[in-house]
Structure formats: C-alpha cells, structure tokens
Length: 218
Image (cartoon, rainbow, N blue to C red; front, side, top):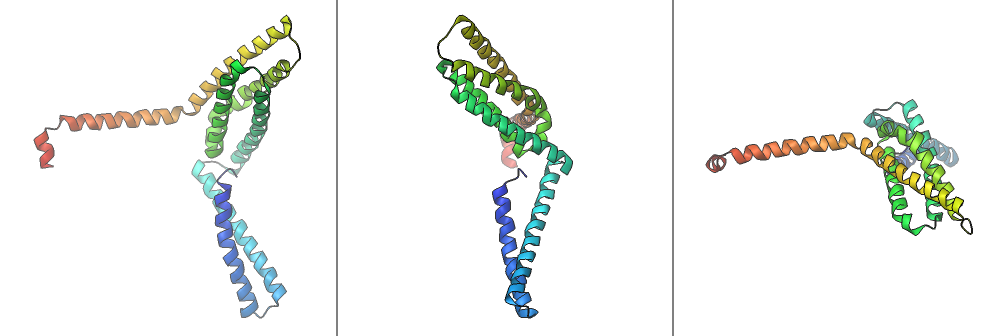
C-alpha cells in the first residue's frame, strides 16, 4: 500500500512482538509446552497478529479514500508504472546539456513529481489525473529521451538543430499541458478554498456592520 509504510510497520511490530511474548509465556508456563514448541507458537501467533493488523489498516486506508481493493490495485499498478517512467524522465532531463532550457526542464519535473506525490497520498485523485498518466507523461518521457539523445550527438548540422528546436518547442507545449493537468487535479481544493474565503469575508463584513457598543455588550 502507499499508506505510510514506516508507520504501518512500527504499529504492527509494536503489537506483534508483545503478542509473541505472551503466546510463548502461555504455551511454556501455562500449557507445559517445550521451549521449541512454545517458540514456534509464539512465531505463528505474532505473525497472525502482524498480518491481521496490516489487513485492518489496509481496510481503513481504502475506506478513508473511498476505494475498493480492485480499484486500488488498478491505481497502484499504474502509479508503479508511472514511477518507472518518471525515473527515465529524470535521467533523460539531467543528460541534456542545453543550459538555457534547464529551468524549464526542472519546472516540468517538479510538476510531474508533485502530481505523482498527490496521487500516492490520495489515490482517488488518480482518476482526475488519467489524462496526465495515460497521455502527457508518455509523450514527455519519449520526447525528453529523444532530446537527450539528439543533444548528445557530436557536431551539429542544420537538420539536427531543427530537430532539437522542434523537440524543445514541443516540450514547452507539453509543460503547459502538464500545468493544466495539475490545475485540474487541484480544482476541487481551489474551489473549496475560495468558498472558505468567501465565508470568512462575509463573516468579517457582518462583524464590521455591528456597532461597537453592541459588540462590547456581547
């Protein structure tokens, strides 16, 4: 799961270890089992507790985000595939030797990583990012790798320079597309924020309309 795996591990371990100790003590002292059998029961008991807590935490995670197991498996698979593409993209972008386009490349990578982080943290956002994952990301990776390859070629000629220019221009257009993807993914959050701002402004306006004497009486 893409939940906080470290926290999950700590919680499961913190419960499983005392459970194993308890099972060992009950088996060894309470039921007169041998040391080896008691240890075996303790391992089995701790393992069952560890797995059970993991399954419970997974159910809570899915419930929190309103997903079924099937939906999450689909999202998780695509996020893993996307991460591999992002790794390829990062390698390609850092290979390009064109200094003037460095800022644009870093901004593009930053936005793509932000979309990936949001989708990992809140998997349901993946559905709003499908255009990014199934179209724009693939195009960015392919063009970036092509750009890196062309820019690494020794010597220059008119045809090569034209290809580099066209590739760089298309990457700029894709950067704008990815920016729109980001805005769409965050659109619900922005709408909610604007609503909260309007409510706050309305409350402040109403408060300002109350005479000072009335406010002192309250």
